[in-house]
Amino acid sequence: MFENIKADLLSALEKDPAARNKLEIILTYSGFKALCKYRIAHWFFLKKHYLIARIISQRARKKTGIEIHPGAKIGKGVFIDHGSGVVIGETSEIGDNVTIYQGVTLGGTGKNVGKRHPTIEDDVMISAGAKVLGPVVIGKGTKIGAGSVVLKNVPPYTTVVGIPGRVVKMHGKKYNDLDQKLPDPMLEELSRLNKRIASLEDKLGVVSCRYSIVNDPDNLNQQKEEEEC
Ligand SMILES: CC(C)(COP(=O)(O)OP(=O)(O)OC[C@H]1O[C@@H](n2cnc3c(N)ncnc32)[C@H](O)[C@@H]1OP(=O)(O)O)[C@@H](O)C(=O)NCCC(=O)NCCS
Image (cartoon, rainbow, N blue to C red):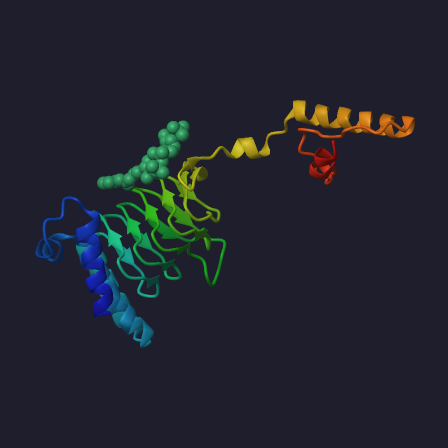
């Protein structure tokens, strides 16, 4: 527990350019205070002292505006900046070095029982006001934009924005989901013509090069034929 608290302190110092020293964080950072209280409450929760755990967590909420259920599992080096309005549900799981800004909810959708809150992998950043709902998994190193509502699993190292959340960046490069899904009529037509030419050539017994730029999954020997030409 103390190791985790120390890691949270160092994380706040490292991630917040406004933080001057450890003492300032200990005395004034509500996110750090809420995490300390959570770690104590979680200890009682694990010992099955559920009421004591809930009392500690509700007192922390009153003082900091941050509500962390004592049953949640939170890794080390977590930084809750500003904090007010943060809600972390009972079955949430949060990895190491995660950053959470004010107004974030890690909640349920109301449709699930049992594991009903999100799993946040290491090094994720959840921006101000973002809501992550349901038992979804947010992949390592992902950034969730301010005000987003995320309802589906998110792959690692992506940026997700909007309502509902959509991937706009992957591994630091812009990503357009529509490019992956919209049909390409030109390519489809070329593919059709290519097949007709090939069948006519077969009928005429013409041996020819069948290299095609069309990435046709039916034409598995494309590369081999290209080499033969
Ligand atoms: C998501 C965020 C972290 C940026 O991540 P990034 O990986 O650097 O992404 P980019 O800035 O390159 O933005 C990618 C695209 O998403 C858009 N975008 C970024 N944040 C957005 C948001 N919150 N809502 C909607 N669209 C957003 C950008 O305009 C850009 O769109 P474009 O490709 O059409 O130009 C940042 O925009 C954000 O939301 N920061 C908030 C941090 C915060 O909570 N601060 C509070 C401090 S008190």
